[in-house]
Length: 97
Image 1 (spheres, rainbow, N blue to C red):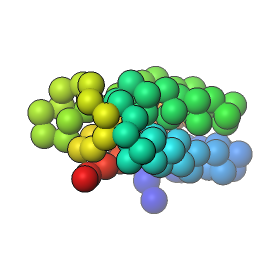
Image 2 (image 1 turned 90 degrees about the vertical axis):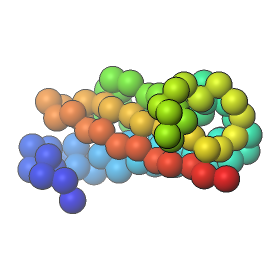
Image 3 (image 1 turned 45 degrees about the vertical axis):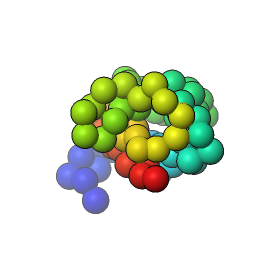
Image 4 (image 1 turned 180 degrees about the vertical axis):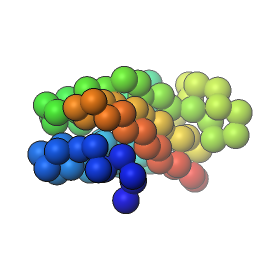
């Protein structure tokens, strides 16, 4: 559990897992051969379903070069940041072949 959790209200703590769930949705899209841009859109859409999350960025990149993922399928890292109240949350998920 992140030390940032102490800055979150009870409602914000309940909403916080939605960030990782959104990343998991993006990862599922990548495993189904989505491009990086498509996976980013899936993550944004999933995050938009939680009104307390205010996305800052979502990016899909190659895990070693960190270049934008323009291909379909793994390997990809999807990284995201959002604000939950005044607290900035960051997370990522790695999708391998």
